[in-house]
Image 1: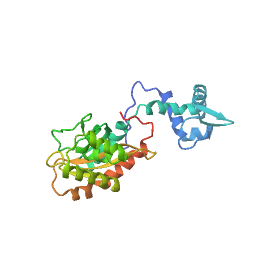
Image 2 (image 1 turned 90 degrees about the vertical axis):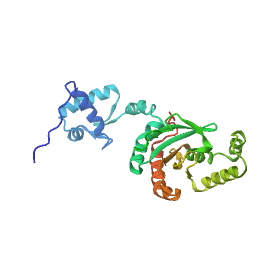
Image 3 (image 1 turned 30 degrees about the vertical axis):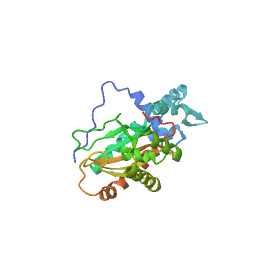
Image 4 (image 1 turned 135 degrees about the vertical axis):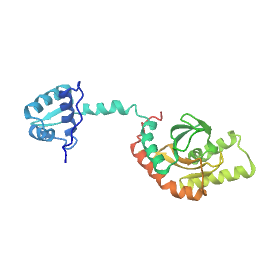
Length: 258
C-alpha cells in the first residue's frame, strides 16, 4: 500500500506553540507525570520538554510537585473564557442537525416569553423550501406543540393567568386545549396534527439542563404529513427524547439562552 502522506504544515506554523499545547493535552491521559513520562507521551526529547515545562510553569499553566508536573488551575480559564460565550443555541445546533438528517424533518428549539414562544434555534428539512418559521419568529404558545409543552410546565395559577389574558377561544376549543395540556403534563410530551397549517405534524418535549430544570422545548416537525399523527409520534418521539437528553448533558444552569 502506498504510504499515506500528511498534509503540508502551514508556512507560518509555530512549532514551539504546537509542542507546548501537546504537553498540555498529554495531561488529559494522566493528571500527574514526571519529565520522562511527558517526553514519552509527546514524543519530544527530554531537553525540549524541560524547556517547555519551564515556560508553562512560569506562565502559571503548569505547577510542580517534587519531580512531577501537573496542570495548574489557570488552565481552566482557557476553556472558561470560551464557555462563557457559548449559548443554548450554540449547543443545540449540531444536535438538531443530526436529528433533522436522521428523520428528514425540521427541528427547533423555543423558549416561552410571555404569551408567545420564540424560536432560538431551527434546522430545516431539505424538503422545506419556503419556511414560515425561522430563528427569532414569535408565535402564540397555544398554537404550537413547543408552546404547549412549555405551558404544561407552568404552575396552575400561572397557566390560568395565561388562559385569562390570552383571548383564547372558549367552549369546546378551550375544553380540548385544557385536556391536551393535562395530557402533556402526565406523559411529558406533546404532539399536534395540522394545528396551524394543513400538512404540519409536530412532536415536542421539554429541554432540561443538568440540574433538571426546564429551559426550553425541542420539537421535530414535518410539513408534508403522509399518515396519522400516531405513526409520526411512534417514529419520531424516541429520537426527539434522546436528542433532548444529549443536549441536557451539555447545558449548565449558567448557559445563556442566546
